[in-house]
Image 1 (cartoon, rainbow, N blue to C red):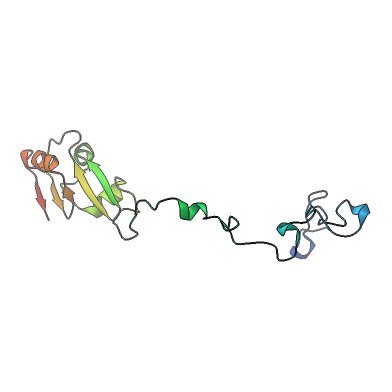
Image 2 (tube, rainbow, N blue to C red):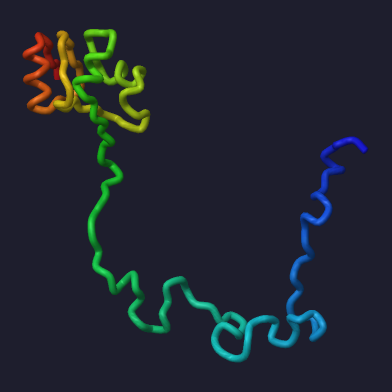
Length: 146
């Protein structure tokens, strides 16, 4: 038999019959149908919203609200001076860092930090730099264009 879409079916023993509750004593799930005796959860429509604690103040309302994470805050990536030193180009902008794999694709801005050494002159365009990194770049003969 050829494998055709209308002939596909699960492997032997891979599927099980659906559990049929409330179908008599012989099924093992007759009478109360696995709901136990009495109480809110045994009755039809006897469910309440998520987090409801029977009228007690729910946990998510008892705990204090803390912190805030802005959805509009920019995702900034950090680049070290050592990484800049390894780049083959002297004019560095965000696109160069992205192509070199130094910043994530999710980042939308980059900042150079004072980590490592830089021994050649580079020009940063549209990239922020920390105070220490700025002095190190300028000491090596480079510049930063905002």
